[in-house]
Amino acid sequence: RERNCTGCKELENRACILETELQCASDINERLVNSLADLEKNMDEAEAKRMRTEGINERLKARLEKSTRNYLTVVEKCEVFQKNDRIALSAREDLQKEVKTSLKKVKTLEKTLFELQNEYRTTDRKYLEQQFSIKSMKIEREKL
Image (cartoon, rainbow, N blue to C red; front, side, top):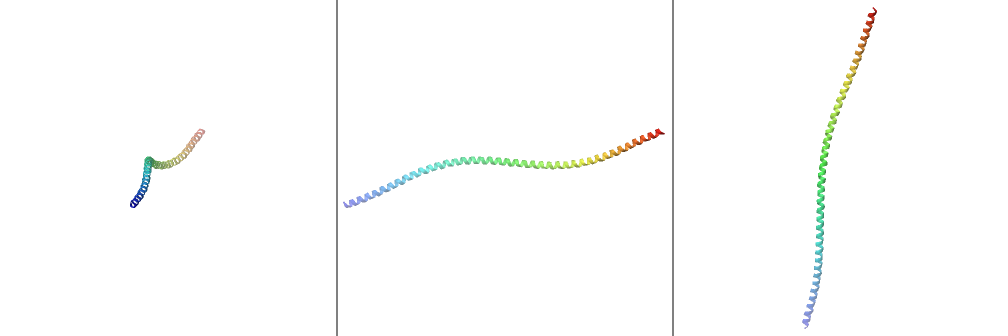
């Protein structure tokens, strides 16, 4: 019986140890189940965040493309403005040359006009002198 009792005690001790191990395993299993649930919840949240991030990225990509198109349009307009500026500058230089040429012509014409006016005065004075001379001769003739 003692052997039995000793064997029973060992069995009871082993049963007690197994029960404790079973309880530990059960606790570990419960924690694992809870951790798995938390992990699934975190994965769902991460997936939702990823989807929101993808949406944001798509909107940002669209904005970037629009900004790039706008930038290229501005660059093209700047190039057109620069070209027009060069054309306007060239036209301005041409006009300045024309103005200088016209001013030279005006000065030449003024000089010619001044010379013609002097010539006219001289001619007019000679004509008046001739008229006076003719009148004087007529008077002299009449006296005779």
